[in-house]
Length: 223
Length: 80
Image 1 (cartoon, rainbow over the protein chains, first blue to last red):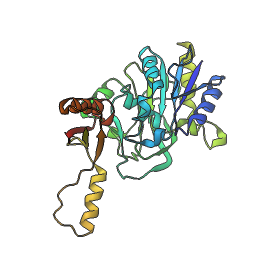
Image 2 (cartoon, each protein chain N blue to C red; image 1 turned 120 degrees about the vertical axis):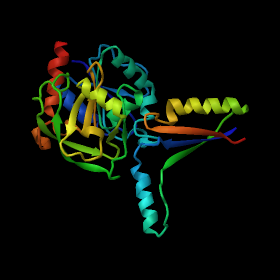
Image 3 (cartoon, chains in turn green, brown; image 1 turned 135 degrees about the horizontal axis):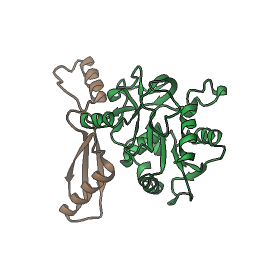
């Protein structure tokens, strides 16, 4: 599998994500700078990492989503490419319009940095097929703006299409319908606030995040 | 041409920051504050000299970057 990780000024989980990709796929991802206008050839998967791209100026992810490389990422997704956005990456994906809704300030207005429990709500996606349905996993969150907001019609639509990938068992941030991560309509774009790459190795204190990268390794190679 | 852009949350979107400010005003003894909604003021200085064109341009900026129309609305005020 040929993957890439996009790097913005202020990204700080890009190398963690690169380690997760290379250990799951047996091949180093290409690191792509935000000013590049074209992606490396033959990519199967793009990761958009967590962090504070452009200092969270204006709105989290707003400026990154208008950077030159993001036009190429949107084209890649529209051609059926796989895209994983974690934390700030999820915020960027909603700002590009690849995923619906937006991430607002946490309802308690505090930055939250702790492990939370997630429920895998669907296994019918290339990101979640290695989990059991309704499996509970422990994954860290670290965000100030993770409060998923969308109108009722959008939430209904996401549920009807089985596009809620993960929910919180104990909602930490006020997200609508306890949503922690959602899929695009073609199920090849996932955005999630929690950080699976941070619990991806026993040396990091847990392996609950491994399932996500294992799912990708299984499904994208055979796609 | 100077243009002010006001970006605010749509009505119906919960504003926890505004609520916290309202609460703090109450704690300071400001009674009778029935609501606080927080937003942004963006001051633009444009080359454009035609007021209508400046307004159109600012609205285009709002649609494409300055506001997230999922939760925000905007208004444009052309000053000079």
